[in-house]
Length: 485
Image 1: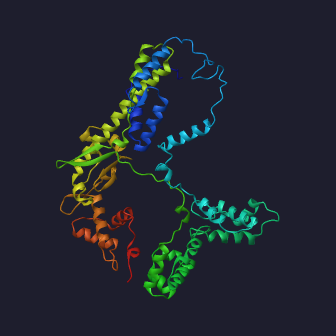
Image 2 (image 1 turned 90 degrees about the horizontal axis):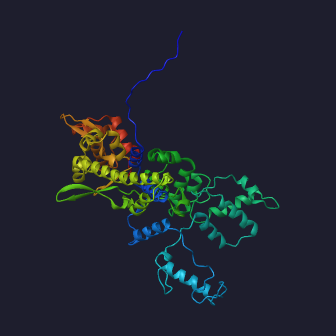
Image 3 (image 1 turned 90 degrees about the vertical axis):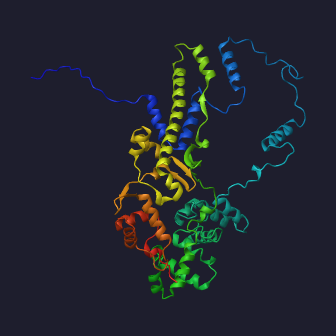
């Protein structure tokens, strides 16, 4: 019969302290997310402040802190007359006071006291798609019932400019008496489809392209384009000009002209209006050549100017007691944050410097000079773990004369050559791009031919690997690159 028993065991295991957990989390963030994290920390933690504080702010903070520690004195009475005002605050404001106040506020906002508009006042406001369409509708003479239906159709358009809602569903949205007929809705939709931009109000991609056919001036090209849009969009997507010419019984050059014209049409006309949320890449480090040697410097734009508010920290230490445990935690977290910020950028800079020492030829000669490089090599050089180097290289960017690259772009596996050496996959992709860019358009290179040419240069690359690299470079297949004369 088993009896319960107790046993004590000693085991060793690694645990991350709260500070290390915060350091790891901050290290793997991108520059935008890291800046937002620091802003949130400064908003929540009273012991953190930006470095670019105005002169005298520390003295003012000290005065506020000392005053908070002193006993409160009697404040002046609210009814004390000031500046000639009657006791009790019953003085009437001077005539025109309100007008002068908002005029002064407006002049202060514009940055000029003489009423002149500032440069920011002249920047045009973004006009959305629906506002643009309503502005055109307001210039047309429409009956109230027709105008209501047109506005209803406009409001149902999505950001692409398409009408994704079924027309029958708009009958209930209109709520008109007598009930809206399908013919009235078709008429309202046709009115919207005649507005600018061309193609707006379409329900399918084919209808959107068909609404833009009137922009083609040549009648022959317009006729061929209409036939392709109505019946052969799939062949157009595959760039199958030869079969299109055979099916349409047209010369190849006329079919090519029509296909090129269709490709220049806008499949999303709604994108022309309204502000697009474009996220720009901000490099974390900048590669510069100083006295013939490449070095990395931190980008000042991504380095947050945060520091520990020493005045508040000293005040807290002088007046500290057991009732301020929350403030003590804030102070400890503030110190961790400042140290982790310094550690983050020191780590990024050291890894970037190590990468430049290994890949400096890439900056001189381009992708074909890229050497094979692994995370372990950089980790051993800078004295970090591979996982730490992986966190540093993700979502961190370096600005070079050749462009802005993510740090992990400089890492690639080695591929053997026939001479016994090694070559990086990035260099092979650069060779493939150069081959395709320099090929004859009437006789483009197939993936198998590219593999044979690479083999003649001593690089053994399989055809499927060439296909994978070509797709990574976002280059079309051989038939789609073929040009007919």
